[in-house]
Amino acid sequence: MRKKLAAGNWKMNMTPEETGRFIEDLKPLVKDSNADVALMVPYVDIKTALDAAKDSNIEIGAQNMHFEESGAFTGEISPVMLKETGVKYVIIGHSERREYFAETDETVNKKVLKALEYDLIPIMCCGETLTQREQGITIDHIRKQIKIGLLNVSSDDIEKVVIAYEPIWAIGTGVTATSEQAQEVCAAIRDTLRELYGEKADNIRILYGGSVKGENASELFGMPDIDGGLVGGASLKLSFADIVNYDK
Ligand code: PGA
Image (cartoon, rainbow, N blue to C red; front, side):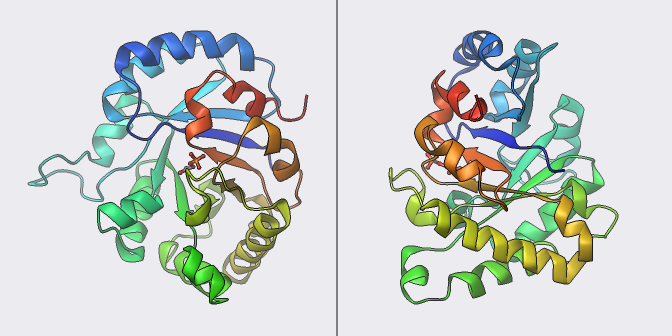
């Protein structure tokens, strides 16, 4: 049985001070949740976030990392550094990283492998543009992202990976994919995982992301192949708790 995961992606929002206050306020609102709860915070907020979330059910992650352990990569953060902070998750290959920072399926694959090597749970993102959807190549595109992103991920490691399906046209736009559209692609992702890893595919969590809100979370998370959400804008408000408590 896959446990649902409500993961917030704060993007480039929240200072350390705001982080501490927000998590203190969020804790009591989500403490009885049936879903796992996580917040992916900016690097500089990680320590404050971990301190504030201590002894609570809120888990902390990062939003990106480099695939090398150290070296001349000004401005980057390595898996070794992340591991030492104590974060549990790291988002890999978010569409904003692909669009603005030239990440490719190949760099995503290197990062996924490195995250696993350092026992960080990668939340590997995939998703189509509006043009790709209109041209009817959504599933082909997603299958390619999944297959290249997971290249050489062993069958022992695959159940640690979380996949996030985020149609780019639904991110930050207020336009949410219908639950049927989201389910169709998440089912195709699971089929692809089954081709690669057999029945282990049934233990891999697949999240939907793109304008998830309190009002649509229960319908989306109720679909058979959707195991929770990666939530941007709505994770910056305390009403994120309504998404976490989608089943209450
Ligand atoms: P959104 O972002 O919920 O603001 O649409 C989702 C994401 O980019 O992870």
